Image (cartoon, rainbow, N blue to C red; front, side):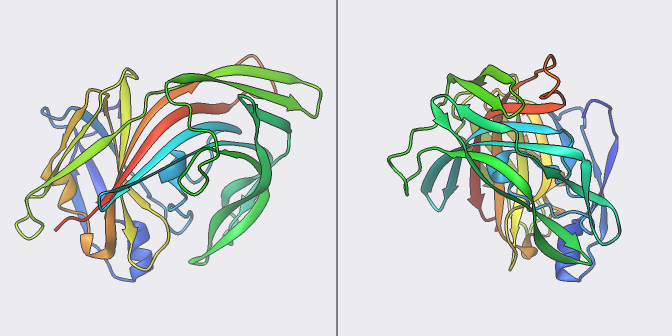
Length: 305
């Protein structure tokens, strides 16, 4: 957070309030005190408008309403739970037509139709074209809505060992052969794989829980860490807080950020480490207004006693 904000008002946490039908008190939380070595952002402010469990743990994209027209994202993804590690990876691309908004029941824009632009290759592999759907809240009910098409290429995972491994610490050539006759080509730098660890200190009953996070330091400048939870009886992971800090291998999250979380309403807590290298293309009219990135994501699923 570049502008210094003295306080954040937690409405802890709107989506959980809606799903559980029980009020949670507003909590005033001091932010970026002198000892802090990170920036923090409260997520999920409008649960009646958006569905926030939108798969950020595999895409690294938190905002449910796309702020760009064109997305091309390579994600190496790792999940750690109960001592087990599961690895996979994807290359995704979706291209929105911002002249075709998608409205909810209150006529508020919650998304955009997507469009087919041609064939896309990541390295030597051609991405598949598949239906694109987004979750939409209508009168408090979640519905999955078809919005058009998207592109996806899946990398190696334990269920498909013959797939190619995710190309950490390399350059991937991206080629777009447009139906309009345009050929777009660029290289995307993929960061080193990130491996995080979480140490829970203190107890909820004592009101002194804090988290010590560590990971293999990298050269990307900064990383993002998202604190979220898996709601009881719900789907997906609901994001609560996003921290941005130096990619130096260590972060301590103080009690004042942890204690207000309504842990009883989550089955598990999820820490998502994201190391990302972005790329901007500004000289191609058909690909301007873009979000292009390669990233390593490590999700650690755990409990806070």
